[in-house]
Length: 328
Ligand code: BYC
Image: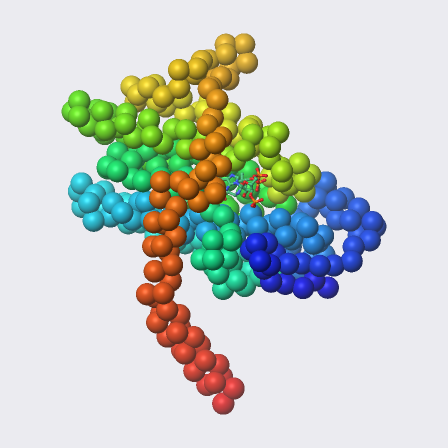
């Protein structure tokens, strides 16, 4: 049996006695590409890793609504506003599927949300950067959703069934998001000189943070080896980052934009782009809460949670009434 809950650091608190035979049988199922389902036996550390990753992923979707929500009232046309509204609603939906997938592992949504509100649980570094103009919405769709797809398509083959299945719909929606972002960039790049300059400025600001989304380099990624052995992750952080650069640089060229990296060069032999050094100090500063918008994002999330307490109270009162009726 396992005990559930989150500890002081927001990590799943799971304890269990595990025999070498159980662990070997579990790894054999993983190696045979069997899906692990919610009621199956699993090592405590596998459960803990999934709760950590899926809840951080869910928090990212929810916090990720803020930079784009900022532009809902300022989108340049009714059509752009409707598209952006649909995209931001999709992100909320992704958060909900992911919280549900994590709940199958024995942690409650309330606990996960509390971990975020208390600042104990992480969310993606990328959402701590500001959206200063409309081109940033294009850059987010193109680069941030583009990076998200690169990372998330392999998660559709994750060994944990509920997470893998949730990711299939998420990825379909992310593909639409990426296309709408590219479409915004394309329009701007084919517009006036000022519009093209806006697109270039947005690329300049979002390029490096998008590369950081993939996480620390493989040598510094403390969870990767185990997560890959468990087939939670199918590719390493650096492999996915390289795939993203290889796909995205030709797209920037097609738009007539310059990727802000003097070291960027196509290695003809390998077919891969070599790129410059990522500023890991900036990444760690953002993770430590010192990015440009960390405080603002958390303050907004906490106030939204408090302002909407009445919705949770009303839903709870309704559910209580319904279950009282069912008993009567
Ligand atoms: N930001 O050992 P590592 C979206 C943390 S949502 C913050 O490599 P792992 C979208 C990492 O958690 C985008 N923290 O870890 C939404 C770990 O910390 P802890 C989110 C990061 O788990 C709306 C430590 O660094 N996507 O796409 O093997 C609109 C060591 O890292 C970051 C997901 O969550 C980061 N960038 O690999 C548009 C996808 N990177 O937990 C778009 C699912 C690393 O030990 N998650 N850290 O305190 C994953 O694939 C993996 O968790 C990661 C990290 C690749 C992110």
